[in-house]
Amino acid sequence: MSPKVIQFRLGMGACLAALFLAFVAIPMWVSSPSNVSNIVLSPTFWPYILTVLTGLIGLGLVFASRHSDTQIAIEDGNQLDDLSWFRLAALAVIMIVTMFALPRVGMVWATMVVFVLTAFLLRTRHPITALVCAVTIPLVLYAFFAHVAGVAIPQGNFVRLP
Image: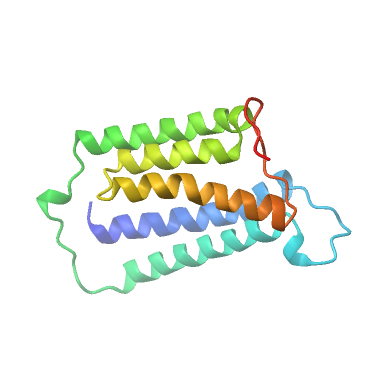
């Protein structure tokens, strides 16, 4: 399959996903109270922003695939091997385990573990930086949102942050 065909199919998939989100998923599954005074505070605002961006990116991919004159050569080194499929499957497992871990250990602790697992799964060149970021970023974000902005961050059943 040529890169132009792949680009076209990805673009059409993104456009179809945006249409599904805009007309089915968000109206049916994202509830929003009618008395929200500021539109940015509405629970549907950011899902619709992401939907519009997905649609625009999809249209850009379709347009680029139809109007590009150059053929992109695929090198043999870019072919997916068995290790790539293993990494993709491992990333899917990490995501599924994250969904089960969030209510039990809380968002901060689960995010730390997921950050570390993903960094080492993708073989980062900076493991020390990844470990430091995995600990500090969730803690700083928790401190800001919980203590400065006054937004409740989901805590786990076993360990609670102050």
